Image (cartoon, rainbow, N blue to C red):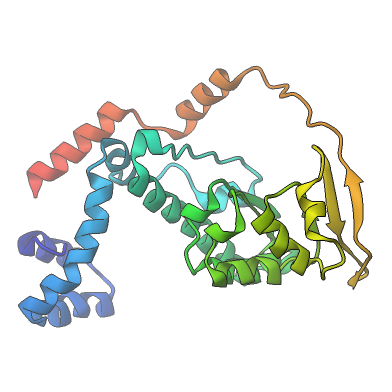
Length: 268
């Protein structure tokens, strides 16, 4: 669309929205060539990084998406994405992860047209959160509750987050539960706990022990120490069957996808 004029004109001929059509036919076509090169280059760099990976090219290069994020959220389904940097590469993993997180954000915000009692609660777990923590997360954290979106954001230490993201995290939680952390994080948490607990108390916590500061009837309570039970052992012994079943229902064979992409490239 951006660099192949013949293909762009072919696509625009199929467009029915008059405003979209006007942009491509009148505004885009009349851009200064230098300005166009400067505007297109960053997009090509980002998209090119994704398309260089055969795995991501096959995921993003399909016409029909068989996985619906809104359907997943509204029907209490489980969606798991393996964004291993060893398989994808660091930059590709971060970029694709950010795309996925944005899809959940958009699906959550689309619930604004429904009554609140019809918004099905959904838990979004983001491991290595710092890799996908764009500034858009500040709005997600501020508005997630009304969209019935619950967030679990996992990372190693607080300084991995930008000041604005950190402020959004601490500013939108009513309850604080802290397990053992390092000295730097302990100083930050002591401040968030209102300096009711000395810094060393966070560093010296035994395993499965935590310090908690919670609210009751929207009123903060005194900080207390809690001991949690050891985590249970996983009881599911059928991961391969689950993965195979999921592929049958929601996946398209790699050979079929690559054939379709090759045919599309040849027709351009």
